[in-house]
Length: 80
Image (cartoon, rainbow, N blue to C red; front, side, top):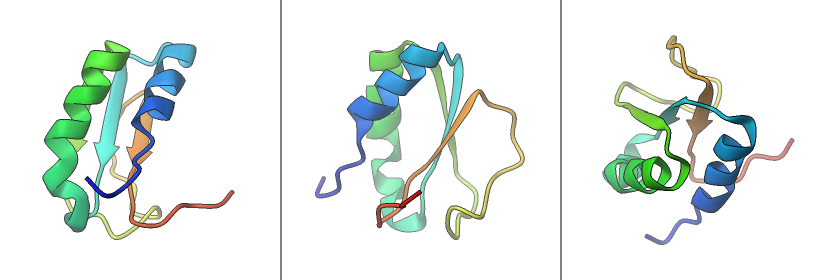
């Protein structure tokens, strides 16, 4: 995988806050990595990890789904 999806950072965040259910959202270009990423996070964080397979047109396109944490992956780094 040529993208740095910061999986270790995500796992650390889940553990620090005790999140139980995590929803991962990928744009079409990264969906081929979804299974691998979900498995890494599930194994590392011991949390229930779900993958949103619906459309995703960016960080403003948030699914209507209840989870403790939503992780939106993209091709570019977001700046806050």
